[in-house]
Image (tube, rainbow, N blue to C red; front, side, top):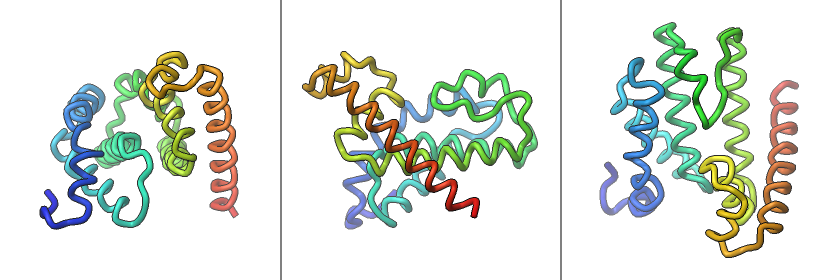
Length: 178
């Protein structure tokens, strides 16, 4: 845990710690038989905090869950056991497929990290709408009620978010493959 004098302690308590019970149950449901939940949670906290120390973290919950998934997958790769049936039901992403090679899974994992960066780069309202829809699974009317905006605005923000994320990912992956 962070010392109370740390400038990041309040941020961590408000933005990250409230998701602990959901994170623990999510990890246990998907990876519990293959890795230690406590280890994944602690390493996730460490990486998310380091990301915050390096700069702005716009979607802490999304980053926390993506980081935890990546850590669990790394553990599985090291053990050379990949639980396809567990991963097939993963509502956050379809990371692995029965016919994928490990190299393809790693590439998809890297693409997901770029997508997370893209979502974090969205303008605040757009990111909030996009996260509520894609991560939390809320319907457009539910998002409209929660944010006090029209369903049309939600739809427009989702379209904008998808377009900006797509452009960001394309540019980033093109740059990395040069």
